[in-house]
Image 1 (cartoon, one colour):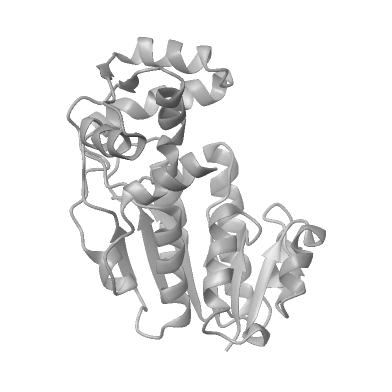
Image 2: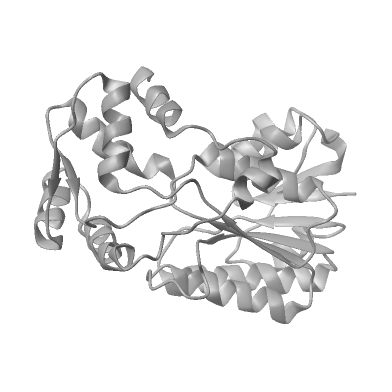
Amino acid sequence: MKILVTGATGQLGSIVIDTLLKTVPASDLAVSVRNPEKAEHIRAQGVDVRHGDFDQPDTLKNSFAGVDRLLIISADGDNETRIRQHQNAVHAAKEAGVGFIAYTSVGNADRSTLALAEVHRATEKAILESGIPYSFLRNNWYAENELGSLQGVLHGAPWLNAVGDARIGWASRYDYAQAAAVVLAGTAHDNTVYELAGKPLTQAELAVIAGEVLGKEVNVVNVDDTAFGEALKSAGLPDFVVSMLVDMQEPIRSGSLDVESNDLEKLLGRPAQPLSEVFEAAVQQ
């Protein structure tokens, strides 16, 4: 059985590969990357490194040849670009005869009002229409997304909150990657949808966890979208990133990331990683 992971040199993909290598022979693993030279450390472990570019469909068909189980890790970019790239990957998988696709989607993708959910709905639809057995890994919010707030507190800034009492199902990148590895290496996941989330918490509750790690009380300041955007700009974030993050606040306030699910812990066979560990690791770095 040949398992292939796209985007394997990224933060999520690299953890997936490291996890798979603990239980799957390297000879059964392959990666599809845009720049193979950046994956030499993976090749050195005996993994088949292949060239695959989401914007060059011919490379994907070759890259996916002989693959039984495929993980498509969602790409970066604007919605239009990502939808096109993901559809290229799904079509190439169909042409190559791939037997199973796992895809990293987003929480409640079918009904989320987050702008980025458009990408995931379109990709899930393309996979469904391909007829290939699938598993949609609907990752909720990454705890690592909040490390900027943690760093701000370390430098004396308040913890800014633009979503009020809305709850978010934060979980660690490590847990999302491990869950993906479980699905890829397993055999009982055809045509499944997993809502992968930690226990939903408010920003204020997350700030308490941060305070326990830092050994100090964290001052949570509720702000509107305008003030939130101004704070992001003053932190040096590019305008397009600021706009994207500000636009996310209303859908989050509306509950797009408030997902009650134990799918993550079921796949992992253990409790989710405590969010305090994510913050502790960031502080130690």
